[in-house]
Image: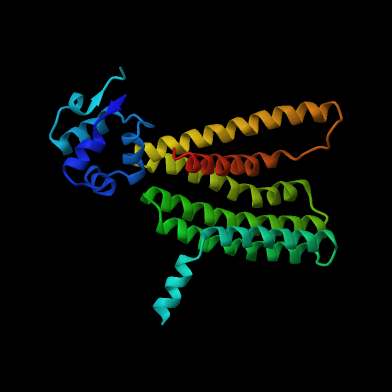
Length: 64
Length: 193
């Protein structure tokens, strides 16, 4: 699964730690999701969408 | 001045304490094998050497990402102390007294119960960890470690049955599992998983 976390973070000038704090998870989690090594659960994906004020499908996309 | 000293102490690499711990264990084993020390002295030194795990646990706590991991480290450290102490008492009693079967059963529990504490600590960690990625990573490492224990255990069992290798006591499953867990977590760290 692809995601736009890095781009969305950069647009807001957030570090991985900033996003991790906003989500209530570890920085390792943000890094693993961002680099595609870990796909978040649906509840966490919803939290990520809420933090960015976007729909889940605007952040996560299927691999082409 | 105290703060500066504390700062230097905090910045010591955790690997230093790990190396010191293994050097101490090796030295105690060497002294015991060469009969330079007796059994009880060896176990007292072993229990004292477990104290070297405190700075490791403290440093891990300082860099821990979750409260569940801090609690896990504390519980494992506590269990490790109990294990070293229980093992020392049990072996000393076994070597020095003619014990009845119920008494032998009872002293066998002394090192066993703290190892149950390690298993309980892992179970509590998995139940309490709120970070799903950290939980996932630990579960994967634990499963790999379990696979290593099963594979080695089965292979060793057949080698032993065909009298190619000596007998190994079954309690080795936990140390082997713990080593497998540590190696897998190190591997996860190296490859950035």
